[in-house]
Length: 241
Length: 289
Image (cartoon, rainbow over all chains, first blue to last red; front, side, top):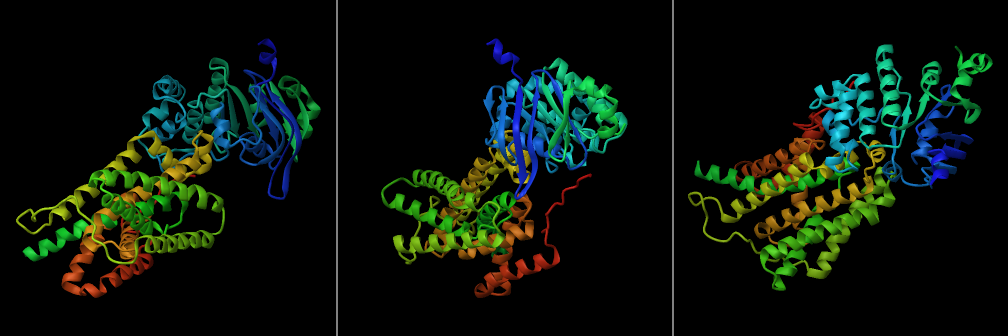
């Protein structure tokens, strides 16, 4: 079905979301192409995390979200995950009480053990440090290791789309570079599409092919990442670098 | 000395019952941060189901298996029907539901089966063993209890389903993101807790006789055991349950007499909560920020 292949993997249109009485997103539209990386940029409080939560069904939404040809808005979080959307949440979602190995086993929970085994090896290939710490309680890992664990766990779901919420947050520049390198490999080698939320705009624009700029719940700029990277007016007024 | 040993051993037998109920309490507490006050009455009701089956001519172990399965279904149904709508409501509302359940099970059991004490058969009949000072029932029920506890441990420790249930208790939001159906895990947890309670009820009934108030004391001892061992630590709660059984028996025989045994459980609850609220084995989780 060629037309379906050309349709974007994820398409949000007129997406509203909020917490209780407070409306955070005021009708935003964006897409993630198949095999693409879309960066969602913006300042604190712009609604980036809420956008990811809306996609995963963790907050009340209106508007439409189409993933892989199917409407997923209004569905339960776990069912969206089972369709192939892996979400590395704000705060990483580590199960602190469990071991590294148990965290990874949970990542592969929806899959048969035999099917997940090669993916487990792939994750250890990306993050050899996790393999050394399998028996360790996950809460004792460093921030960078927890981020690696969170991404590894998400990959074990064998997602079509990876939602990453500020993977660079609180990490040393060297670790950030390592994680972004792996993100690129996950995208290019494994064909996983990515929606990346980042405050560090230059970092995000370097890996993304599309970018959207959020400001207080509205998209103010959207387009190919290369264009936004080159546009000095946008860079100065919104991205501050 | 023989007398002392006898008291310790029969303390271990009743301790196994408290340990089972304590484990059921802790399982639900870990997932919901609520203590299910109706756990004991649910176990009592299960025991009546077993008695009805046995009286209808079902062989003991058949009745045992059916009762465990039925209790699991009832437990899961209670979670699904009564507690799912309570998600996110204030603590007191949940406490109200638990107390309501306690009263309902108690009255329905009295209404259906009367308040008369009834004899409940033991599958372990025969003369005492081990030099004559352990009853066959004590030995058998301890073995059954230990088998149940090991099964539960193996399930939570080594199976993916057990792991998913633990994850759902620790961090439901994160578990959902991994595709775990957290609501089903909660129902399953209630079902398992009810099944464990049912075994405990069937094992204690031959000793204390069956009546609708059979489990009220047991629940109190189990709660004391869970707190003593650490309500956040299933293994600790089990150890606490066994310890309370032995303490209760020894204190009853040598210290305070049978009339004040239950008071001792309350004293232990108060002392643990004031001196060491996390319990003896309550582990604090290390985490780096």
